[in-house]
Image 1 (tube, rainbow, N blue to C red):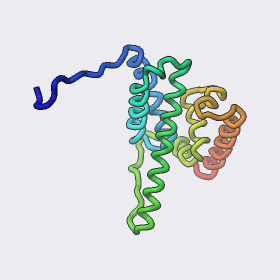
Image 2: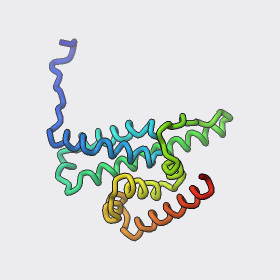
Image 3: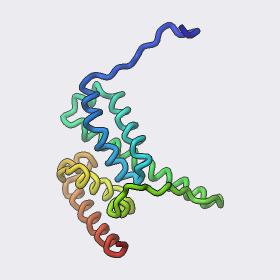
Image 4: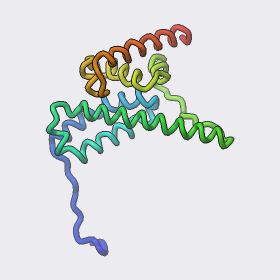
Length: 169
């Protein structure tokens, strides 16, 4: 026994959470990659979102759709990461250092590279719609906006993507 430590309690997860984790993890990695723009960071973002879900599992497990809560957290974490990196890059430029550059991703498609350049809400709506095959109502619930606003995000995102892909094949 370690000095000063009486006992060590192992934290185990309930079987429902383990099923939830296995079911949701791959989708959260894909969503985080699409929203954050980084496949390298996506696993960490998904893991952080699922860790937050675990800490609150007693409450989240009672929700009608705990996956919607998880998606909102994943999107918020991914957007926060992008804002933080942008802020760090601006500071580095102001201080005269080189900008931060992420390594190129090997398995990205041309379309998802273009999705990275969309505004945050459009990027999230496009990712939820095309990666997870979510309905407009589900996306609205996850993003915390109306269905009409969700349709606007999707329309504007598709329009911008079409323009970007047309000019940058």
